[in-house]
Image (cartoon, rainbow, N blue to C red; front, side):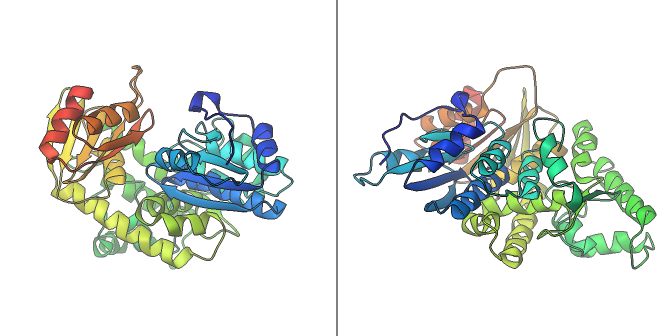
Length: 385
């Protein structure tokens, strides 16, 4: 077991330091937070380890910090390096834009990292490709990307893609039949040209912004789904669609998401999981009982993929900056960027601990599981917030 000191996200290493640490160890344990960006970064590092002949194990969970602590307490004497991705707790921590660091570390190891996978991680995190330190990824992927009008979906079946997208929430979301009916009214050609793609994008934008439950934030949030990068030589049709699937599957079936990020043939099972996940998320928002508090909008439901539902609630239905989805044993929160210094992950941990549960997260999102009543957790969360 490596005896290196555990680090915090503030100590994120440079790509060259990550590569050096990987190169000098006998075994790498990659522990990812179960979200699209962390899985993309994990895939990049795992593929690089494979190319370099470095034995590794990769996994994803909602509480990678706890698994890291378990590894640290193990009696196993193997020279093992624990890398946590999207979370604290490892010998090496990649929490701040991990896909960029992972891509560059893989290159330092002599691998040929996939810039499209890295960009999918950037999009999954809600960032715009090329707007930050990832401009070189766009350059590296230039031959495989083509920007066009339209909507970002993972499949060539437009009705399927729109019905199950978690990049947006509209009246037709989760209902392929409703999407097909709306598309039929457009009279689209069999082969979509740029004008046809623009008409689809307009349909989607109006469906989102024109909803009775839409908020002013929805008009901005739907931009993530528009003007996609079409992909060549990739498992999914567009970059946004790739990110959508990776994030949904990371939460729905982490094992399948790991296989997908590692480059295995997991496309069919990943799309099945994405459809199930999206359908449940959209249905939960329609069926939930909602409540509004100062700075907080809450949706209570019996069952939901809470993290995705919370993000959709924040982006498309919440009139408050923080959205919380609570079920009988889980909760997730998502916060819009504001000027305050709130750490939502810490808030979730405090609230969950108050009712005997576990909580985790980042500055703008949090997840908790607990055995207490939903009302009891909600009270604890409001007090912690």
